[in-house]
Length: 312
Image (cartoon, rainbow, N blue to C red):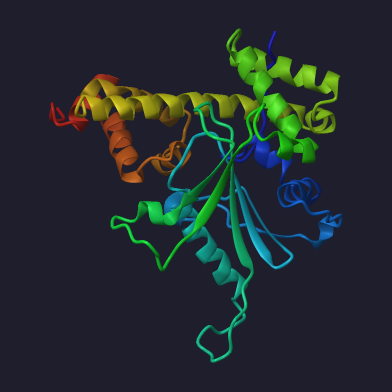
């Protein structure tokens, strides 16, 4: 019988973040990516900008090492807007970094080299490695853009990027753990799937210390992550159907159902928009309609959204 878990945690926690929030593991990951051999975690300087107001962006891990400002983020869904998000983030980080300097003087203010990496482990097929560019979003294409930002996206699903996995035991075992959760989730309830995956991994020495010491929180976060991933799939599928069917209410009704469920958990529209990576104004409009008349069905709310019905 599955026990009820009562764990207080950050709404945006993921197992990836939990694993690499420690300097030792973060340095291991850096070494694997850069073929380096740093062995002094204390040399890392961690920079965070939690719950940034602009774009509701919260980073996974940013740190200074060897005059480089590295931004690592975990994504379970493909997001082509990462270069734009990172541009906003790095501007805020550099503002903090140069706080005690004056950028209006005649002396050149030195800044670290920014590097951006996304660790992707969603279920959509993606190559082992690809480069996302800010210039891809420009409305007008130019051969030599004056402003560019490149994000390296690495597929860290089990079976991908073998060379990288061989260099980082923590990353490799994380991929194995996620793979087991997904495999068992096809056969049983997600709560049971996660508990089985955790128990097996501990027994087989996969992330053994991490899973043993933070078992309750890992289980709670893993269940949350899986549910969020499934809901994001529904939203993407709904958005696709809307595009194919010219915005029919049936597609929007699935999004309304997800927002209704999260509202019922006590989350406000801003937090829901952050979690689902949706426009805050759109989510607020749906939330307001649900509060205005809780008895409206998901389809009725969706019909209002597409203008098929006016609010009664």
